[in-house]
Length: 251
Image 1 (cartoon, one colour):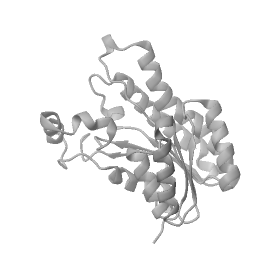
Image 2: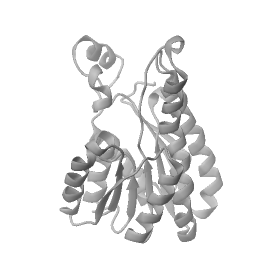
Image 3: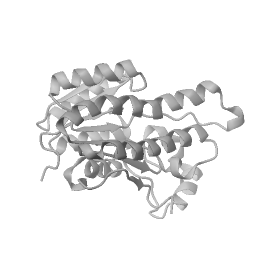
């Protein structure tokens, strides 16, 4: 059973890690997928991924677009609407971390994390709600983090940005629920991606795994599965919620 047949989805930051896992799973479930990447170095990977998604029998296209730029977000949504006709699902997945102790953190580091992790969610959501309101239907899924719920030493900027995503999600759910537009967040724990590469081996990995009841880091597929649920009609009565996909880390 395909859960997203004929749905059109935008996934920001879609060429690696969680974003790639989401794009692959959405396509496997029949969604047409528009996904973004930022750097020129990701162009080849984006082309390869688009071909892989198309091989699943769906329409897919890669867009080089910066979700932290409001003009780029407006142009992206305009282009996607021209190419795909509508937008049913938006996954605000693009994100970065610039970890540092507060006393050593620069203003530039703080502002960059806020711009990419939080401002991008505002910019993209503001654009995609236009076609969703017209259709009186839509699912917006914002990628937060368990760190946004718990906090973590050396990650004040990341934690603040991801906590902001949760507050934004709840507010948008209240604003747009009457139009049948749902907005939810996912708070992953430690996930096996490039961003956490330095945590995945040796004593550091064992230390973090010891605090996770399920005893392992998540895979990108674990997070993609939760995203699929929130994108599909299986979650038709779920909005304004944050699902902690963290293996029990925040219990």
